[in-house]
Length: 335
Image (cartoon, rainbow, N blue to C red; front, top):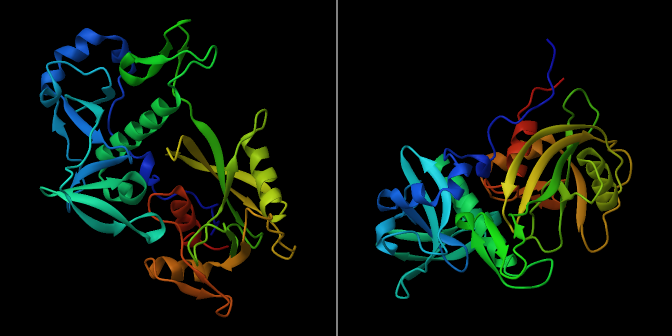
C-alpha cells in the first residue's frame, strides 16, 4: 500500500465561516440601510471580547434597531447569512457583571465578565467553541477593529482619516487617499524527519515567554521580496539552525493577533544535526517522537513527560492552525 503525505484533516478553527462578505454592498449604502431594521449586531469591547451565550456555540448578537434607525458611523458591515445582514459595533459589558475565569490561550485562565447568561470572551480563547458562522464573524470583526486602531492617520501626510465603505476602507480628510485593511503574511512550518513518507519525529520549540511545558511548531513573518517557501527555509535556519527541504503547503488560517494570516507548510530535516536555538527567541528546540505527540493530545492539556522526564509537553490550543497541523501529522499513516 502506498502511503500518502499527510494533509490537514479539518479546517483550522478560525478559517471556518459561512457568511457571504458581499463586497459589492459596501459601496451600496441604500441597500444596507434598507435592511438595517432586520440586521443583527455583534459587539466588541476595548479588550476585543464579544458576548456569547453561555454554554452555546453562538454569539449573543443584538437587534440593529437598538442602535438607531440606520447604521451608526462606526458600524462595520460583516456580511450576509441566510437573509440576515451582520454588523459589528463597539460595546462594553455591564459594569456590574460578575467576573469569572475561563480557559484562555494555552489553557491559562483569563477573566471574563458574565451577566444575563452572556459571557464576554476573546477569540483566541473561545474561537474553537463557536459554530462556523460565529467563528467567521468574530474573526472578521476583530481583524477590522485592530486595523481601525492603526489606520487613524494618513500614511502620506499624517492627516486624520475617517472610515468609508462601512468599515472596509479609510480615507484621508486632507488628500483623499484611501487605504484598505492590511494582513501580514506569516509562515508556520511543521518539520519532521526523513523516516518514511511522514517521518517518525517532529521538530518542536518553545519561546521564553510561554508558560512552562508549552511547545509548538516554528513560525515567522515573510520578509519583503521573499517567497513563502524561502521564508520557511530561512526562518527555521535562523530559529533553530536546521536546514529543511521538501517544503510543501498545507493550508492557511487568519490570525488577527494583531493582523496576520498563517500559511501552513511542512518540510523535512535531518534530526542527527545539532539544533542551535536563536538567542532570545527560542528557549528550547527538540525532536519529539510521534508517540509522545499522540500522548499529549490524549492528555487533553495535561503535561506529558518526554525525553525521560527532562521536559513536559503541552501542545497549542484548538484555536491555532498549529494544533490542526500537529494532529494531522501525529495520526497520519506511517510508511
